Image (cartoon, helix red, strand yellow):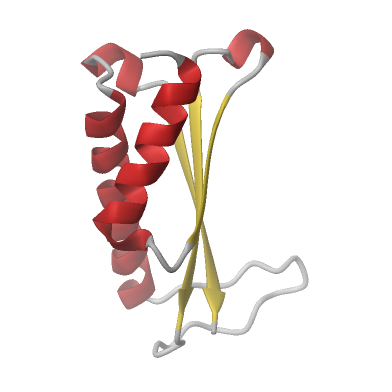
Length: 104
């Protein structure tokens, strides 16, 4: 599978896994990171937690509910991407998943 096919397959699999309403971007690295697969997903959700207001740098102290939700999304996206890309266990380590959470 070449890079373009891998990118398309991973993005399609993530969307089919239930992230269709979210903004999902899948790219490959350039230069020395040529073999890396980068996945970015913006998760839009209604705030129903006790997270604090963002600090001056835009960071927010997250509650346990949001941490758990973030871990579940990350693990699910990573699992789907590994299966769709057909990478070996070693090459699957060269995959970066970045999640952005936004309130509706």
